[in-house]
Length: 456
Image (cartoon, rainbow, N blue to C red; front, side, top):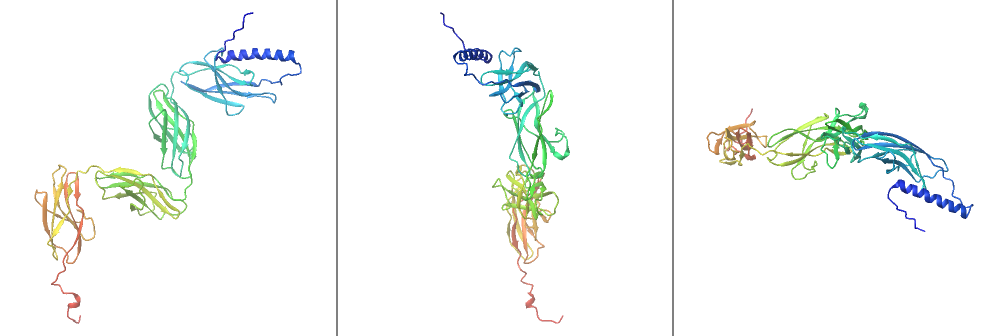
């Protein structure tokens, strides 16, 4: 007799047929060997192949359901997907949620192609199948997104991340997230609040900041290509409640080479009244606190601003808003601000001599005019302002020499003054650091105790 050769392949349908033949042979042998040793009954489950939804160029969502009796044994179930109507070859998509009704996302398909699918169940011995249905992927479409993932949630911010399943067969013009407060109603769109970000590794990620503590927000990813605008499913995000004050990021609204005007908002006062708020900054640490330089702002308005002066040109500063209540301190996100390269004149310190009771001799020089002509120079003087400006008493000095000096008169005896030099070009006014001096006591003026007693 010739031996029987059986070739085993990876084709699941052929394996099923062989399994059925071998099973029948084993069943026949068991019946002839011992009629009492029989396998328990296993009834096939009722399977329904559901519809195909969310169809795009390279993917779709396929659904089905399974109805099993007490005698039904099911080891696995899901969807069979094939490029052939006969389902002679297929891929298995296993359901893992344990529900009788299930849906599965299939990806990495080919654009504009028809696919066939059906629900299936496997008992460990045999397969049962539902009705075969079909769907066709699109040639092109708007961007398609996966599920949004939320992380880093606190009182005023959270981070959202979303995978782009399909760019749609056209270049993406814009991607990001759109959001709104839940009580505003309706789905968020690109006409609401948006945060636009670039795609990295088929994923978009953004931090949404300066939100209201304890508020519920609706969020969707969105993208625009040549075929239109696509959105992800909407997610709900509720921010944490706050006990300490919550302040927004600082925003630079005006600046010079040596100053910046910043603005922030008080997002929440916390559970008690705010007793102080303002801005703190540093050039040395990237996380400034009120232990560094700070500027307190008066008033109780939700929006507040202030001018930070005496900054160095061409330098980086770290600035953030703060607010204090009885529960503690709340800080805003950090603003990194770089002062521009200065074109205003750079001045040397003032040198004084010949201090008298009402006069003093002052000398200084322009260290660098930044290649712009000096149109005015001189000295600024004040009794109260420790860094006087041209808005105080100004003593102009004529001449074209960068080294200049003058005798200042009209001073008060025995009085402390603050003095600095200045020079002006078309970029602005540059000042030296101020120094302090005190005029001499007028020895010709007798003290009150030295005056003779008189009847007034």
